[in-house]
Image (cartoon, rainbow over all chains, first blue to last red; front, side, top):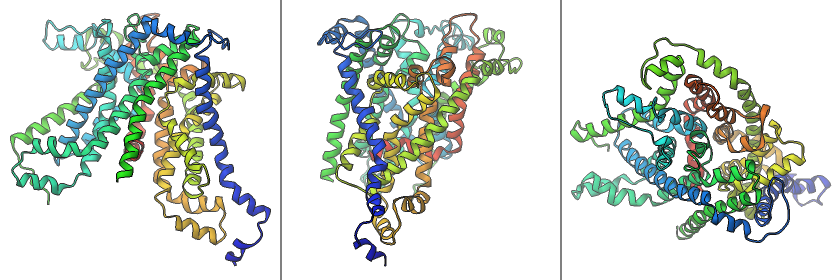
Length: 302
Length: 278
């Protein structure tokens, strides 16, 4: 009977059934078209205007971008992003890989240890920043702890040293995210064919050599994913700076996300803020496009 | 054939490194807890890892007095936003895998970019829109924003799960006359419990921990707890009470920490789902 219904003349109810999938998807399509791409376009337009406290649509060409490039604070923020992002990614990757390889050696209580490495990821960057701001407090934090423990000459005041403060951000961010890299690589290591390792062992290769030469190179895609995610976290870093240093001392620990927020929402430089947001989008695309390209190529070859 | 873990110097070094790393990861949490139970005097005379002279709850009481209200704001924002975005994600994933139509793949591609979107690039128009709808500085406005910008991930979770289900299952049900929502509610949803868990936990952590949207779209009474904590920690008026700061940080972090401890499996799956499957 049901097969007859399929071929019967479509009733209004059937027509509705046919349109249902599109109807259900419609709100999301609206959200994506307006809330994602429409808003990006809108911000793009604003970056060519002289908007200050209120949006204005007086066209000023590339003036805001020019101002950005002439702005010392923007350069400090960009350089900080390179230093912070570079160190954060490099250290998280090295630590994550190392811990994953060690954890993969059939250790006892692996589940517990894994849980400990990963828990910071559940905490917000605001909580992370608050905790590390206290730990790195010059005078009362680690500074005092190590002196109390007998290291008389120990001084640790990076949090208030303009040329060192960015490393404090790195420390906190690595603590928060390196466990995640560990988890990614551990999952990757579990997928490696054990017979290859055994064959190499039979050939007399030592375990470190096997990992460096055979196992880790085979985890290229995991490495790439981790790199992508970490870079993305670094570019978006705003909450950590806000909680830990608020960009200070002065603006020595500013990052582009902080710059964008400060100029757009507190300093009445909406046009400049929009321009800085567009450059941030450019940075994300510069990382994303090669990644997607290689993903698609891999899929075609697979 | 597992190799025999022999007791050797190498294994000792492995365990030593792993345990040392455990200690390093745990220290900030231990310090936060210890500090939160100290008196301000005790903090000045002791050090980070000294045991409190007397365990006191002053810090926790004061912290709750100043940010407790914002804790409930976060609850009011997080619960509806998580539920709505998960439901929408499930429906989207269902359509995008079982009811494809011309352009639906393109739409999925466009949506996925949302996973990588630096939100700075939509903040201004979003704040104009919220203002227009009278939703600026309301928890309702934040719910809307979190639903919109969480959609990319929630759809990805469900779509990736539903594409792995054989289409024949749905075709058979369709031939039996089951409609769009019947198939979804009776067949797919019951199978999706693990994906629902992953999605709920992912969204919960993301939204509870959000700071950017909270600080931009809310002010005063409607602020989420992350913003309140940040304000508390970064005020420069009066003597700094580190015990209060740390207790407040624990209060802000506790919900996601508890979720992680009790549902760590799903938490991890959520973290890796976007990364590994893409």
